[in-house]
Length: 368
Image (cartoon, rainbow, N blue to C red; front, top):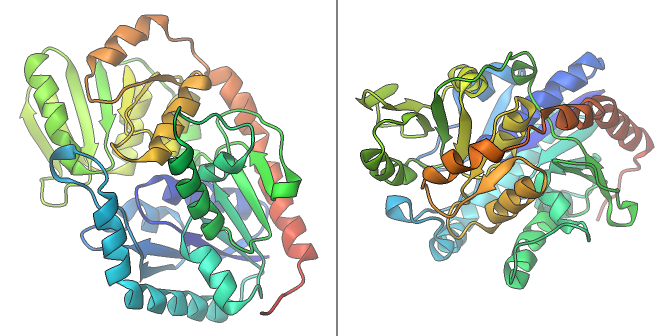
């Protein structure tokens, strides 16, 4: 079976999920004929994705989140304004996606939370079955626990989730833990997707905290905390394209440009992970038995949900700021969830293959 990926390029989570699913599908003798990936101004598709996806990568212009300076979080107004001003460019991107679909002739499209997924189905008809995969689809589940007083934000993110999966054959909702599926909502709850590189790691307990941030503007808060706690060893990964590959500020604080292999090796040997509440990063940490401090990006509701869900699942602790004292105080009471999580994860590979094969085999093309 020939499968084409459509992947949101913002952050690293959806990219690593695509790599992991590609590994699973190849073992089942299926072919990945390409990976269509959204890019935006000032942000590059990481080298690790191009190296590891083992398929042709087709880049197109896509909307992205606009951030406030100095680590003050997401700027919703600027994000919406940028999308509206670039609408002609984004419509051309949908045409480009259709061109690649026509060129590769896949038996199924796997969409990793790319906004264009539902728009493509609407504009060009459901000629190829689309299966949508993301943790965000779990937020459509009636039993998902949301932060308090979040009715408006819940409506916004669930609208976007429905948009990305509009007219799709099924939603595969990645989850930290087992929950019942809801076929009436086209929601099948499945384990996370984790790359083989993570599965092969042998965790040890080092003496440093590992920090991963989705945007380098958040680094100021890390530096501020470090100046008051210079005795704590920190290794931080960021997306600052203007910085050196390794920027060592002093004996105990080092910043690294995003490098997949280096990051994973440090994750396996760190004391704990501090991250901006991305689902994939938290999953990798739980699998390796690493406590996590989850800090949602300000004004980023999706990450607030991830952090709460992670706490419920025993991943660690959440915080509103990069006050790393919170994770240091939490560590003595952390209970390792890696064995339970690994058992849940191991049930996933066969389920992904089965779901995709059934949908592709039973699909009847639909035109508008």
